Picture 1 (cartoon, rainbow, N blue to C red):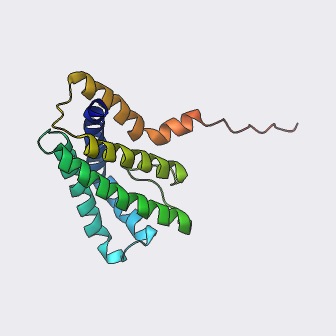
Picture 2: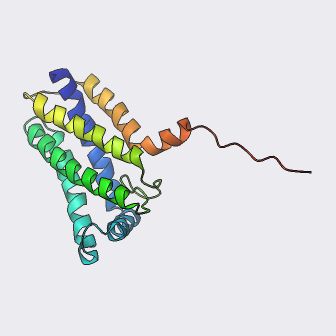
Picture 3: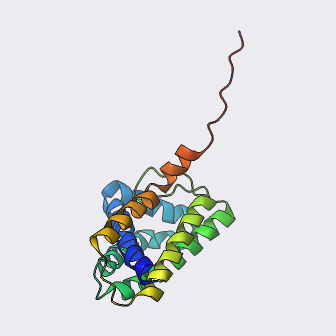
Amino acid sequence: MSALASIVGPMLAIVFIVAAAAKARPSGFRELVTLLRTARLLPASWAAHAAVLLVAAEAVIAACLAFPATARAGAAAAVVLLVVLTAGLAVALGRRVPLACSCFGTGGDRISTAQLGRNLLLLACAAVGWAGYAHVRPSLVAWAVAAFAAALLVRFDDLLDLLAPAAPQRRRSR
């Protein structure tokens, strides 16, 4: 368990810092506020405040996960945040609210059960990190594996597009 925990902590740190950095950019922040207003999960007047809190929480969690002394607390905070985000995503999907995923900045695909699955995977990783933590000091190899896994999760929507079967092309009638 400690070997897995030594990978998921750094992986989550990378995922959360990429998410926070993308949302902190002006265009990413505007898109996040729009998403929060459109989702109608909280009063529209709270959207900007909630966006600030989300970006700050992601940055703090990333910082906590990056250091062994605070990794367990970071993993616990990641579990809580991911439960909230996953629940909000599930509610939006249930309501069939047309939202674009702005998890890692602007230009995301429309939310679907695929993003819900990604969030559940991240939640499971955070739970493993929290439960398996025993003052684990990730090695350079663990950080490298974590960076690769984080890149796959951050580019999840692009990977789905790449692996999706191509739409059949129409034939032109002559």
